[in-house]
Image (tube, rainbow, N blue to C red; front, top):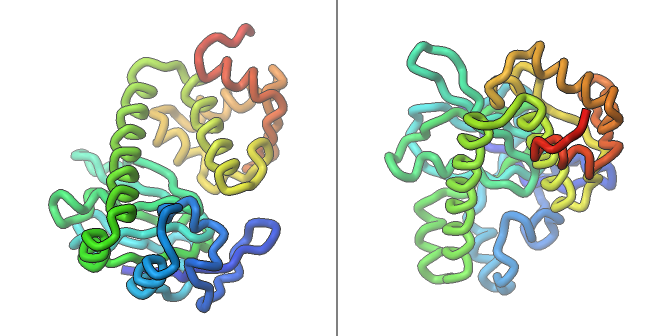
Length: 253
């Protein structure tokens, strides 16, 4: 397994300086991945169990499917793809994680990770040993509630993905993914309408149950309709309302 990445300070452009000395108290993403109710003393206790190492490079794993579960992880900078192997040996993308988001909870039930997590670009990751986190949660009720909420959110998102893949058109699936990334950017105080997609078109298609060609056609169609502009991986949403219509299936073409 690759070494866990550090908590890092971000520059104004959102890029990480990979500062190994940065703490949770100075991390601008703390409100996203930590309970707001944590007091200074509680935060210091949590800070003491977090492990930080070197940045992960693109293509390096945080953990792999079947590996013993020991920790959960918070993305500090960069982005991560979660995937697992189907019975036929093919890769199935199960999610994308961005700064301020927690991953690795799939290993809690069986003490082994049910998926693999791969850095899509140079990424900084905080590793939080689960046993120590569990012990700390019994002493800090707000921390325990927070992780219950995170697990509930992951279950909800899995259910939403199943619904998306079973009932919606290609246009709806792509639009829903773009709106999700837009909302997650907004939570990090970044632009909700102009961002870079760290994943490939193949990863998007795999995640949404579409071919690469279909994903490309949808992007082209959205450009022609004036919903957004696309320059390789750079996305600029021109009309959020129309994109929401596309996601709901009510867009007039």
